[in-house]
Length: 460
Ligand SMILES: Cc1cc2nc3c(=O)[nH]c(=O)nc-3n(C[C@H](O)[C@H](O)[C@H](O)COP(=O)(O)OP(=O)(O)OC[C@H]3O[C@@H](n4cnc5c(N)ncnc54)[C@H](O)[C@@H]3O)c2cc1C
Image: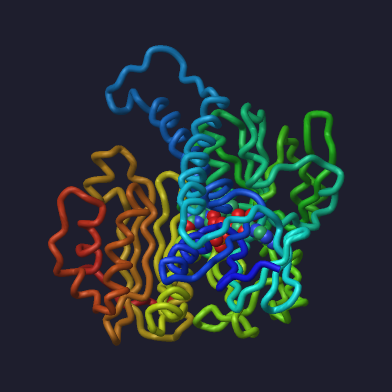
């Protein structure tokens, strides 16, 4: 049995950085990874998808070149093999950089293999048994395959396997109109495929406000993506041209035939094959490891970080989990997950930047609200860049004057939202942002203007 001061299971977005802090503090640490260092984000998530989104953006811009007075001779052609090779290379660079850092880390042993608990302080990989008084679980999540009728009888893609495509599907049917599905749908449409989104809920990306859903639908539909919402009874069957997707059982089955089907209907934590029961670690009904506000599990000496604890589903939340655990263990701090303000982006183009509560969530608190909204068609920067799709919106607590949440769907929305996020993190009232002098011309410069035009909520 090999003894360590700490074992990190999973080399995703929290584990390697935590190993860096622990070893710098003098601990001897083992990091175990069963597949690729960097986890989902680097290998099958953020990095390859945002690289592909960038290629798709160039294809879109090239097709629109004439709108900007630029002449492109001949037809635009997308070379999918090169698009894929570019995404693979960006991911590989990131992964190998991480691997070099971890392998060269003094005090760190990197072990490749699948780890399973054998007890609260011991972990097995094949014949190897490791023990440590501290175990950090950073095992992430994987695509969940829904129990749709027919799913076992048809070939389908997941967010992982679609990255292996080096050719253009003739017709991609995306089941699931939320964050992952929307990014792939717009991207593949821009690459030149026919694309249909099939969504069970009455609207796309149903966790967002209805006006955000509607504007996103307009954006993707405006580029030729077919959208079928309210598909309550999705069924799959083999078809000579690929896969037949039945989308409406109530009215006797209108169907869509796709050459390829992508299932983008959520993720599930990698906790079912971890031997958690042998360590006595509790999970919730969906398999997420139960943690307190410091990310400690119910078993002393075991922490859970990243997607597997159900407290976040993003790279920045996984990384922040590392910061919280490291600060509390090594710096004598008392940082808590509850202090984190939710923020994220959806990388359709133009992107959606989001922070804090939606308007719907803010209204559910019963507090008196002030709401500001401005279409991107009234943002000079958007007009100059030739993309006025979307809008920005902010929701303020009328009593405390603090911002409760905001959405910026529009060009630069993923960056501009940080102005709002920073003021919320500072705990300052909205007046601070309203009186700031932003740079012209930017998307951010209209945030103070919007705050100057807040209206009392009509209680819609
Ligand atoms: C298509 C897609 C796009 C995304 N885009 C974004 C984005 O733009 N921005 C964003 O913030 N987030 C994005 N995400 C989410 C982001 O990738 C995850 O939130 C993030 O990777 C979570 O990090 P993690 O460390 O918790 O887990 P992971 O990164 O999944 O790492 C977990 C690691 O643990 C390993 N592992 C699992 N079980 C074991 C075991 N038993 N033994 C050993 N090793 C094990 C896995 O192989 C994996 O390497 C995206 C996700 C997807 C799927």
